[in-house]
Image (cartoon, rainbow, N blue to C red; front, side, top):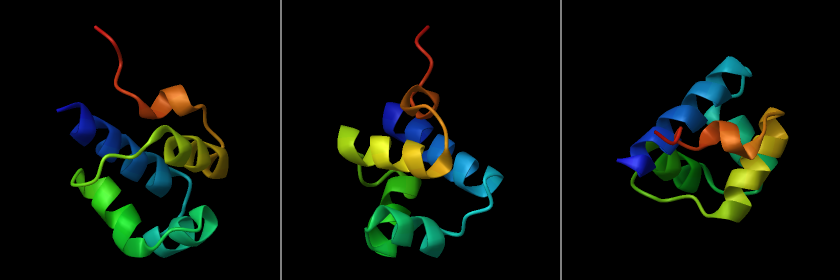
Length: 69
């Protein structure tokens, strides 16, 4: 379940910041297939890619992680 929450948050922040998948993938230096898999939740992002995504989107990495209950 955690993977899907991260995927949803990455997609939501990407759209909020006005990036297409192509634009974000280019900024991250990954293929659109990898970014698409991360956003679908079929590929779990590692800490390095989470940091890169947060830097490009101008947010804190913690904003992409599920909120602890």
